[in-house]
Image (cartoon, rainbow, N blue to C red; front, side, top):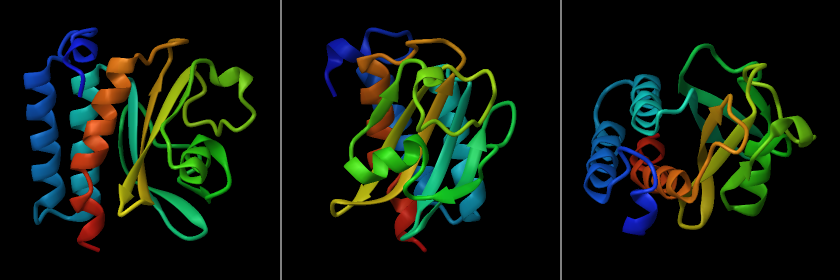
Length: 165
């Protein structure tokens, strides 16, 4: 992670980002029930990044399914085809997808009606996308390079959640 980018937002200094990634990895590797681990990880990411909503998803051969989230409400689409939504776009490309204003993106599947910005980061195992971290905000153009770097570091740290299936 680039230390300069991590300093763009409060709480994203390299030391705290490393500590958060360690916490995420520790929870992902724990013996707690998998859905509870996903919920705790979503909570850690949401609070650490000061985001409104964070969801952790499984990516199967044909469906994407939420396994844990933290925020004001559950997703409107807890399961949907891998070809749909911004999650589907991240799975298709294998890259992080950031949309500054979801109202102008036909791929967007509503989680909360007031969402304006969304970032979806793939979780990869040996190049294959096995999950995603979905971060939403009610603010247009909410996500910075610092946010992207932070959530991508969490995506690398969360991998044990997917390896203990």
